[in-house]
Amino acid sequence: VWSVKLFELYEAPQVQWGYAESLLVDGDQLFCTPCGKKATMVALDRKTGQPLWTSPALGQGSSFCSPLRIEHGGKRMIVTMTETAVVAFSPEQGTVLWQHPYENARQNHPITPIHHEGLLYITSGYGKGAIGLRIADDGNSVTQLWEQPRQDPAHGQAVLVGGYVYAASHQKASGRWSCVEMKTGKLAWEDRGVGKSGSVLFADGMLYCYSEDGVVGLVRPSPEKCEVVSTFKVPQGDGPHWAHLVVANGRLYLRHGAALMCYDLAAR
Image 1: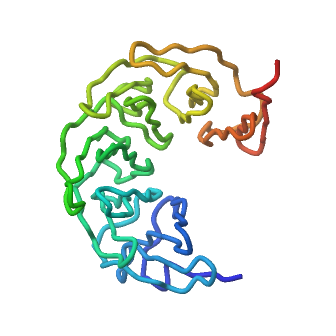
Image 2: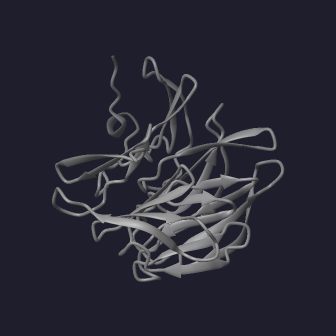
Image 3: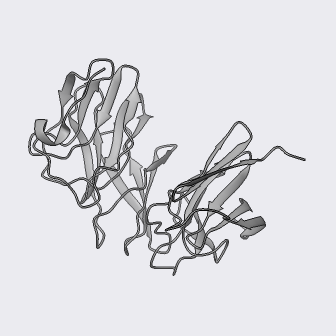
């Protein structure tokens, strides 16, 4: 129906791993983060591809982060990460509401921020770890509350359940899994779990964890301990175990290389 060449239109450089951002749709707006010389974030009409607004160019490169739309104190904002900062944009005009410095050794920040009751959980791998930010009542600034270097997932996302964040760690904890209290940044536990690092999702009251060792595990979320209920080894495919799991309509979808597998979660 339409196409837009973001690199050319906004003079954005190609990055080493290419754009890995999942685009954000909100109503008829489509939000993209080219991080170019002409704009850091842009809003397009999702039906036509025409620009609705462009944000200021911040001189910060892309870091593979998928943006998050939140509302705080009646103010809407789009929160994402560039290679050197956490940034919030106005979804109406594209103005920068606030930004907070955040860097690691690689400037790779593919983990989407988590928002809950005015708090933002920010994390990535390569030696940085997680931080907690408090959004001001007027939505125009943030204050860092804590830092927790032990929880630093590289690309496997993190999930918030009952006030605690669950994720795999990349460097600081040698590929272990961990649980961190969102309000305080306190490390509740750290465990080998289902194996080296990996991705996690939450569905039907359980954590579905997929390790780089090729093990899929069902884990009961609890700040008390890491309780692995059951596991199985991925039987097909080859290459790194980096694809994220999907749970939908009682089924678990798992991709490994060129192999796609589907498991019935509702089977007796």
